[in-house]
Amino acid sequence: MAENTPNSPTGAQLIAKTLQHLEVKVIFGIVGIPIIEVAEACIALGIRFIAFRNEQAASYAASAYGYLTGRPGVLLVVGGPGVVHALSGIHSSQKNFFPLLTICGSHPSSHLSSQGSFQSLQTTTFLSPHTKLTIKPPKITDLPKALFQSYSTAFWGRPGATCVEVPGDFVTNTTSQPFPWPAGTGRVSDAPRTMADPARIQRASELLASGKNILVVIGKGAAYARSEHVLREFIDKTGFPFLPTPMGKGVLPDSHPLNVSAARSYALKNAEVVLVLGARLNWILHFGDQPKWNKNAVFIRVDMAAEELPINTPFGQESLSLNGDITLTISQLLTTIRSKPNPSPYLPNLKEAISQNEQKAAKKHETPIPKGKHLTYHRTFHLIQQTLHSLSPPEDLIYISEGANTMDISRSILTLSAPRQRMDAGTDATMGLGLGYSIAAWEAYCGENLAGGKKKVIALEGDSAFGFSAMEIETMARYHMDVLIFVMNNGGVYHGENYPLVSDPASTTPPSSSSAVISASESWQEDPRRAKASLPPTALSYGTRYDLLAKALGGEGYYVTNEEELVDAVQRGYHGNGPVVVNVAIASGGGGKLEFAWLKSEKESEKSK
Ligand code: ADP
Ligand code: MG
Image (cartoon, rainbow, N blue to C red; front, side):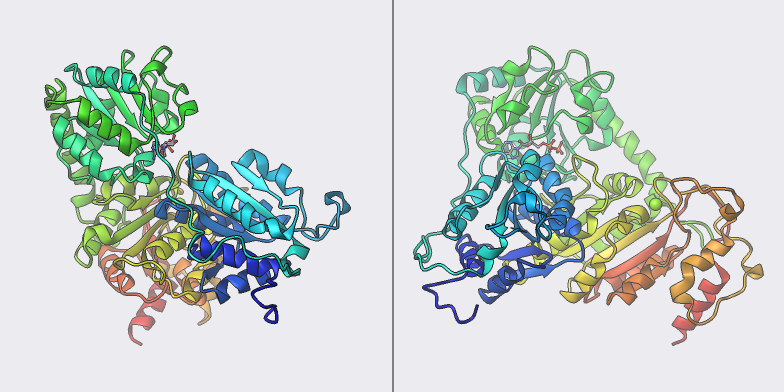
């Protein structure tokens, strides 16, 4: 490959050169035949390649990188099984509208797809239902055009997934055709944006100025659209209360006085005119339907995708929907709504509901938990945030969270101050994307190639969700990614299990010095569920030492069972140089004593070192 002059590059070099022209800074993936040379050629041109342990995590990372940067994340995988594993992130991109370009290997162009080639698949057929566009270029010289088109298509219009399938022989074959673009001309311009129909803007403005109970719903479309500035102006000018969706959270700071998240149910039930900015009326918003919503509520929806607008919008109201870019559409509304509308009549009641709910919530996280009792989710997240805020400006903390309780409870406790500061399991409630997303966030905010302040990536993981791709800790360690990961260890899916955590420590025999490796099986010995004929499907081993796993994979780890240890671990973990796992023994609903005797003695011996 090195022998090739720039005048007769290999397909691999052509791909790398095209990606360089497209200003791609980083590629996520796993190499194998035939795409190793593609990754090598990219690295030779200064593009970073982050090599993962499973294509699933790599595909989640690339898709999240697309959301965070506004330009497609790029994924490189082998054909066949590589594509099958990557389908998770590809599909997730399509469902969440994150721009993603996948480049995958394929059988040689001289073979028929039916021949049963090595790691091969009818990729176009397989991926077509899950992508906006999948291209198999017929000639090596078509590679740049195919990449250019699929890269642009991924983030123009409604963002999503695209794919270029590269036949194996194209990678190493050479071409003497000149590179299609002169230096500096390859960059794809920003996506074109459209304004909404002025007649509809007029109708929407009249409704919004009608003096009824208004609610503005801020979705992750508004975060992706980078609408924060114009939205701030809009809310401040109109005085409309707003409610963010889980990933719309942070577009305006949580501390904004018109944020009604703490009275969500009351707001939904009593809003009469709802302006929905970049959010589908799917399960996250209860389908815009009763009983959560008022039966007479009128929805004004803003979305770049016209085909989304009739979906779940109450019949007859589609005519109010605004098809356009959120930032531009809000600017239009700002011009048509000239004076400040009368305040929504339900505002005083909303504020009352907010203050009552906040008081109730505070009780759950403000009361200290004495040593020997389980930490709770509420208290743990409160302490994590409090400690992190003593170490970092709040807006420099990037949160990734997944796992049913972990995601839901942390969302209500952690306050956000900046847009795109938090990612979660998203539209499909996909568990297992947390470590991939964390790597993407680290690359987007801390990677060497992007300017900007150094932020800290914090992953909040349920123990079940963490298990999907825990091996990516090694990936983080390899690239010195200082991600701080909390595993909320309740020994199970959802609520974990309601059983005493351990038998009497006095009656347990401490295992030998190699306890680290056998901790899970030791805990299994003591697990009272063992006596039962079968385990509940939600059960995971209790006391699994994910912290030791992190150590074994090149990171740091802490096992914490009380407040003091937790705060100490947050402080140490924040300053870690690579991945740090804080394994938090969390209440599963049961009481009982906290630790295995041998864990205690192991900790004591660690301390005395
Ligand atoms: P959430 O998860 O917050 O409920 P969804 O993923 O359901 O949000 O919806 C996001 C919506 O935002 C999608 O329908 C998408 O088409 C839309 N969208 C994304 N970017 C823009 C933009 N720049 N302008 C208008 N709409 C956008
Ligand atoms: Mg759990």
